[in-house]
Length: 142
Image (cartoon, rainbow, N blue to C red; front, side):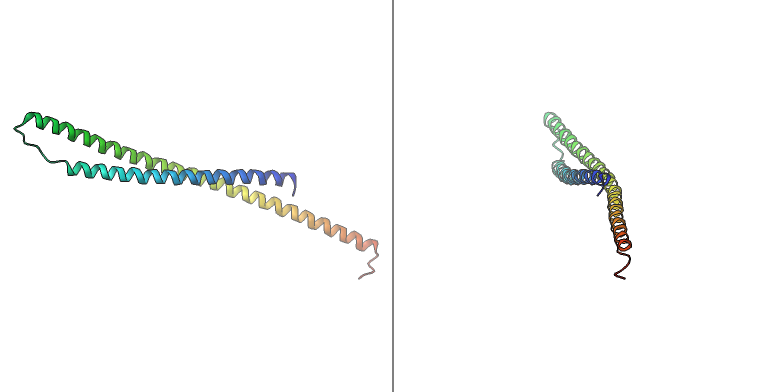
């Protein structure tokens, strides 16, 4: 293969490694999104389970219960926000993987063309050598 073909092969290997890294990034992002979703659901369930109203005649107890409910609500909101961020990370990783695959496939076509060109050059050289050999021998074997 030509020097250009060798360089393309090296670049193709690098691109494939980059694509594999993007696949790993996507897998991690999907796993993080699943964990965040489960955490968000669990926080919401805990919030719903503890949403009972205290006796309003006990002002101190009512204030404390209200503060606890507010804390639980903030926790649910934070868990939901983490889930949304995880979904965004997943989508970003998916886009980067698609770009890496696109770059890799284009480079694969270039490498295939370079190999095909090198193969044609070898065949042409073989044909020239066969023609020269036949003309030197005077076509005796025909």
